[in-house]
Image (cartoon, rainbow, N blue to C red):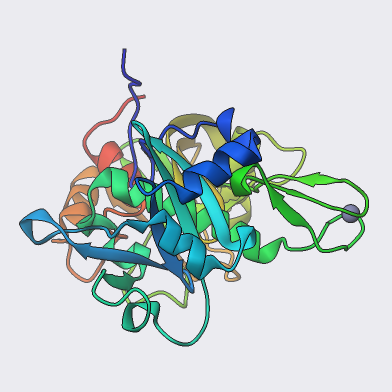
Length: 310
Ligand SMILES: [Zn+2]
């Protein structure tokens, strides 16, 4: 039976992560030199894509041995997993010169993942999001968090080990609660001063240690809008590689419409009827816009406007 779940953009990576095989460095090394193995490329956080079918983009895979050559060593390589029998790697490239104008010329172009996400097949967007999140973690965690010594990659890049104190470090995922507050037939959205004029979105904040998801949701609604949550329901989650979040999408009933922005994170909050929310999602509500389909906030507003009931 396939998994039944609402899949946001960046979820649904179809690769077999082969987490048992990647523990074997000899097996990983052999896959890396296998002429059938493939690699995707990331350069300064951008991803290598090429034109696909129907004018869409798709991952521009390169040979794994070329990725290995460009990587300069294991530090910048990641074993992504298996696609059927084919091993898939990723390489993290840096520097001022665009590799698509150099060693990767003719193989594709580097694009901002968020900008092209909706123009990619969903599995490709999820695979690239995985690689991006892993490389963001790698760039930010090159030293042991216990003793400060430079750490080294292990398990195909899925772990870092400190050669000095032997501590092991694993990739981070930082949970963020994002919630649509509702009261009867209205939902609440807020806007930050830095956003484009007229843009409203769901309220959000990091889950803090010692909180469960419902408590974090209730605290954020109280802090940012002065609301009291009485019921919190889970809608879906979304891997969000900026740099390493998991967006936890919630719909939260509150006990009044007496809302006020905190003026720190939010400059304005506003209630929308279901009809207005539907128009907002369609892009036809005058003077107001919501995040696009790539964002889980869009999916929360859409679901509620269509009568989602858990
Ligand atoms: Zn250490």
